[in-house]
Amino acid sequence: MKARLSVLMFLEFFVWGGWFVTLGSYLAQTLAASGVQTAAAYATQSWGAILAPFIVGLIADRYFNAERVLAVLHLVGGVLLLSLARVTAFTSFLPLLFAYMALYMPTLALVNSVSFRQLRDPAREFGLLRVWGTIGWIVAGLAISYVFAWDSPALVTQGALRNTFSMCGWASLALGFYSFTLPKTPPVGRGQSRKQLRDILGFDALRLLAERNFLIFFCASILICIPLAFYYQHANQFLIELKVANATGKQTLGQMSEVLFMLALPVFLSRFGIKVTLLAGMLAWALRYVLFAFGNAGPLVSLLLIGIALHGVCYDFFFVSGQIYIDSKAGPAIKSAAQGLITLATYGVGMLIGFSVAGWITDLYALPGTHEWSSIWLYPAAFAVLILALFAMSFRNETLRGEPA
Image 1 (cartoon, rainbow, N blue to C red):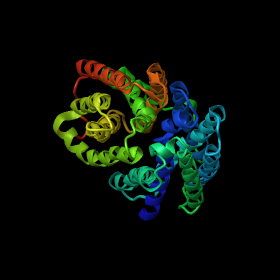
Image 2 (image 1 turned 30 degrees about the horizontal axis):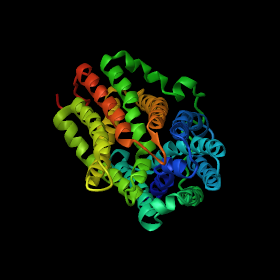
Image 3 (image 1 turned 135 degrees about the vertical axis):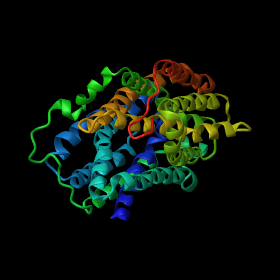
Image 4 (image 1 turned 180 degrees about the horizontal axis):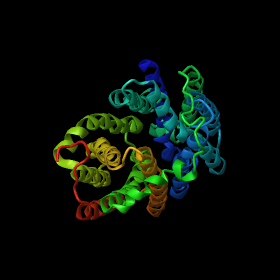
């Protein structure tokens, strides 16, 4: 069973990582999209995150088995990805991408639901299972650079990144058919009273915002998504425009470091506390962008590689530790609602704002065929420092539930 679920995780994130990382480069190089248009494309992820609770909460949790909903979403998604590979105009590309992300984002929760229902000890076993998702993301990036070389300067200008959608489309179709073979996972809400909108969106957790510390953390989580959006949206485009060899493959250093720092996170939390851990994550965002601003594809390429490798600290020390903080603050009755609320706030509202800001600033520094990247990266670096300073002055350190005082 664990092997079957590992395959599920691998394919789930292979399908996403195989096109999402290079999307900005593809749009700029093949569809001649502006920064604002690229922002609109990446914002489909945010809209998908906003719509996901409705699909999972209103359909999968009440009427159909999770594995069947998962199968149908990936089968339809595979067709959409194959269609995206054939589109030649941004005006046709964007609505197809929106439709795809509206279907894909709910699968993240469904994959977790199927997995949790089959594990005897989810708290201990899920982490080892989830790492296969990270491996799937890494394999997709390595294949793009080192197997097919679709992100090489010569092939990028010929539109080779279009093939990433075909690759992921076929993988999505395979995952769709594979999902039908998974163990039956009946809806948990069948026969229960109808869920209200406030339950689906996690509004019951809003009362946590009455506590000063949690409110500060909540606002910081939304704001730090602005620097995060710069990386997701423009890092690959930046590396390719600088003509860094095997850019997409090198970006997998971020996922590799994510695995390593995930192992270090419990020790860091126990020794330094939640406040210092969150501040370390914010500091890593600022440092990463400073390294990007001064690095190049020549003698200073090491600065770029270090900036990429900092992804583990950036993501794990803020977002993962933030999930742990939320779990500690919320009582048993609203744990799920609290996690749902912060996901909606960050990947929905926060990233939506972040993608727009990143696209607008990138357009300000557009040059013929490239951008003035050294100036662009200083914006998210400065913003991360500002958030860090405000958080350091206003957030009071506290002991998480289950830790020694």
